Length: 381
Image 1 (cartoon, rainbow, N blue to C red):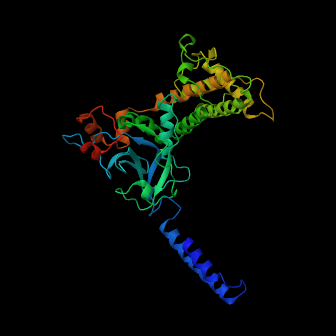
Image 2: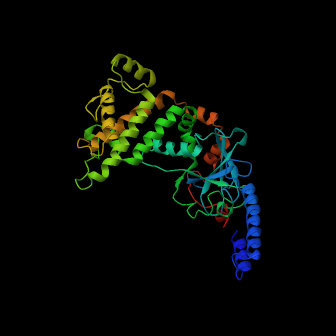
């Protein structure tokens, strides 16, 4: 396109705008521009996933290069290696060592015979939720897709034609994991795939913590064992913190509402619905609030209403403890639903077709327990 523009300018530099030569040159450039655009659109269609683009590298996550091939030397991966990992709905995940002396990345190939809808619960979004849930919200990471046209496993991702163009940060800002971590988290991924209601609630809970983070571990401890007391913001920062706390309360309440509904005037029916949906004992004491979980359930929605409807003014009653209590309660509800419906890790690995041989090779490797970002090329040196 740039070359076409350059040729046009050189051709009409000395021509008058109203001259036949200028009109002819402009028409020729327009025709050429249309032809080139049609070729580009055919070669790089934007409606991914499609026949030309159904592979993507997941940005924001990578893996230490552990030994994963059965060999006496332990078998560190080499550039271009691609090893099956597991399946997640329409996505087949594999481990791709895309360049020497770097971490291994996660690649997905989408089954084009089962193209998802716009409300596609992707593996990337599920991994992001899983990281938050499994770390007690200590870690948070957004996972994005770097779509690759006509994928070639022997070519580094930075040298391949991608939908996102030349993103200079494609291999940065990522969490590095050991592969065993994801074998151990199979049951979280499996439930996120199986149960849309749980997925939505868990995603809202994670979003709540991204808006307003606190030490969840301490909030779940009796007061005498807490290392953090979740102090109120300083007077000069309260105005900045209120919107974050309000959003956190709203999202936490949405997570609760999605799993057990709103509390009704008939407490007997409300209690019956609670006990159908989660095993959390409603009359147990929610220590952070000094009342039963069931009583706090009713209080929560009043706090949510105050946070969601400010009517152009700051809430004079909102405290940080309100947000911490709402989020901790939502965590208890989501965890209770998880405990009720989750399967074993072994069953989850079977359902998601995890590569059991890969785990066996890692455990039996001569390099057991070793972690390195380097590939076999450096190992041979």
